[in-house]
Length: 130
Image (cartoon, rainbow, N blue to C red):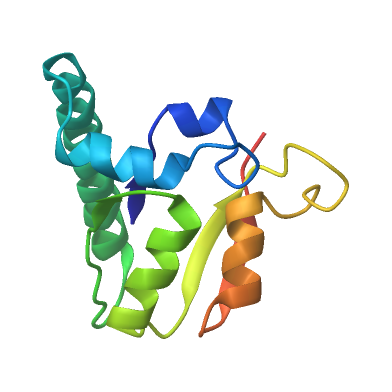
């Protein structure tokens, strides 16, 4: 699964600014300016291609039966992942983590941390290779 987030969310934390960035992001996606559409199209195509490649690699190395679904969505990553896990009810989730900022996020990234705390199934967290 990959979630494409609005680039403005990297500049403004939607929970701490006076304007409602989540609503603005959703509305701008529904009615994007003509110049923004190539960004969304490219992001979807790139994510779909990368996940399809990973799916193929995983299925070629598994013995027995494995079920792997490629999902590309939009919105805040943690919200999208939690929404999909509620709908799909997976057995477990495997996530990588960057562990980039802050003491609390040293071991788990902010998205990973939210999924571990709020997810409805076990989560295997794998540190990103350095």
